[in-house]
Length: 208
Picture 1 (tube, rainbow, N blue to C red):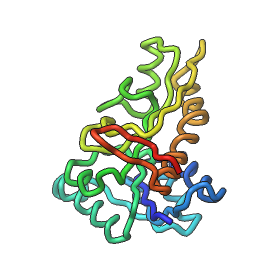
Picture 2: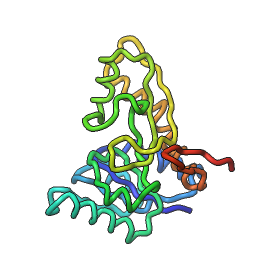
Picture 3: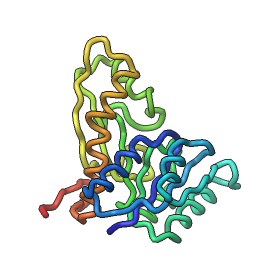
């Protein structure tokens, strides 16, 4: 069983999807620590209601980004975390942090990378950009986290149809329901089963 740590900043719907999959016995793991970048994030309530350890670590409380990254990494390492999941975490961490958890930290992005990704593409901004471009298909991508935003090796992707009359809000909801909440728990399951192999920046999913 793997020990999972989560980084959150908001509601934590993707965290909930992972917790639900654990409850169903689909993931051989347990979320044991949830850290928020700000106070009042509803994701903290989701965790606390299950007796999961929570903490608030605000970047502004540290002397430098490097100090913040080190404190976060030390926190997770002290708790023997095997996998860190970004669950609506709104900060970009530096290379020192990502190197310490290389191929052990994953994120979900609400688009089909390499489209509509990178700095500035988060939340509704992603869906606004997709609609403005007039794409017919969007989706979600689970990838390993590296120091370069949204550029890590891709684990899973799932496409979602863009419909006439969509707003950023309706598209966001459909992408969450049809893609994010499906492939994020699946990626965590594959990691727990030790079935993800990264070679030359490409992820291969090993047979069971």
